[in-house]
Length: 258
Image 1 (cartoon, rainbow, N blue to C red):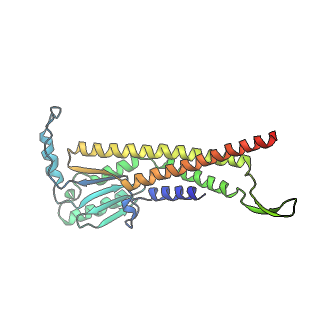
Image 2: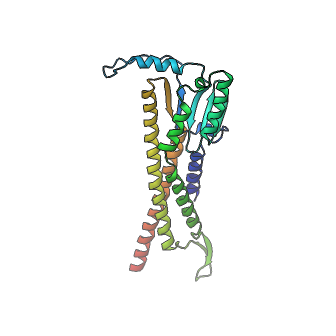
Image 3: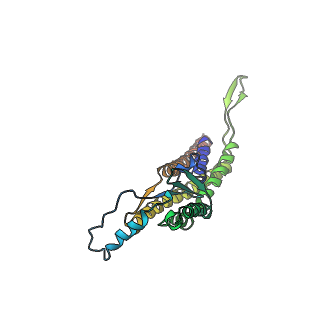
């Protein structure tokens, strides 16, 4: 039950990443920021139009209002040039604030020259999917409820009149359902976090490539740790229930033979 609670807490923090600047801004899937240093033209014969590299660099290195955009499952966080942070579940609201800052500087387009907010919003809406994580949380919670019905230790008086502590076996159907829920939760969580890891890495690589290094991308370490830790905890619950069921089955078979 404790491990189930830990799994739910870890996944809840992961889902809530980038919805608030109070610590949750550090829980992000992908970070995109304008590179401070100049980008060199790649010496690659496949590059048909090398001149585009300098043009992209000139566009991106103006007086940008934002320095970094972080994308989570349910929100975005911006780091402005004055190091202030803004987080919201609405990309449109963040874009409006950035445009207002750009208008005050007489150049709304320079506020976000390569449209990092738009890129991060598309990543959040079209690439990542949080539905499987919600399913994992629900299945883990149902497993937690079933585990709460398992009988605990209590005292009984034996035929000799002495007290002893006994713990009855849990209900066989309840154990099977609990193991099924935990196994399903583990599989959904594994698929979701693996998908998250692959998509985040691919998005960072493509963003850097398509902007010729003008954008520097990072995969969120905290989000990956939370996700994989939750998967491990979910797997431990499923394995423990499987071992419990097999052990009780063997004990019952030995008892019946006697």
